[in-house]
Length: 245
Image (cartoon, rainbow, N blue to C red; front, top):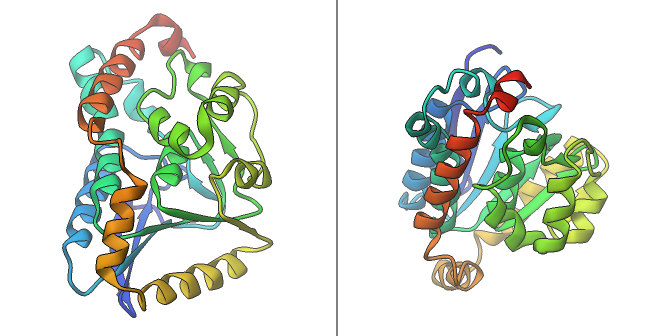
């Protein structure tokens, strides 16, 4: 596979949203925009009761921001627009009226950790190590930080943000509350995701909607907050330090 894509496949009332990019599932602006729109549209699709967020391939869930686009950002306004792509996806997941199950089959970095943290129920394979590498290139996990902090707490989030060179194993992420379960293989993960999603489809959709509101209570200000964080990243990415690294 060499062409980036975002797809929606509906099976047994479960909407499987899959994204892919040949560069380890990194996310350029156009893929982020399509992903946000696909999530929003799926949230209003009456044929879908539960969503699953997944990525193509079997090695990397998401490598985060597209470095190819990052190095071509030459002004703060463009930088804010780029990082707003991640903000828009997180806010689309937050506002989606349906439960979103995360299927994390492999390593995930930076913005990918933010996507995993923004799902409502996240399941992973033992290969799904996580890393926040942003400090290495002179920025920080500003946009995805609120979503990650909400899931694992400020202490754990600050630990992986500061230790930007280290991949933390899936079991660590489970202990901190990011992953609900960790499976020995991708096949076992897929079976569990399918079973969980289809079982949720038997629940009262109104009850699930009200529960989702409870889960995300206190985040109504995130439209403004994540926009501010995107502007911060957009300025920092212009530094000589970032360009060199």
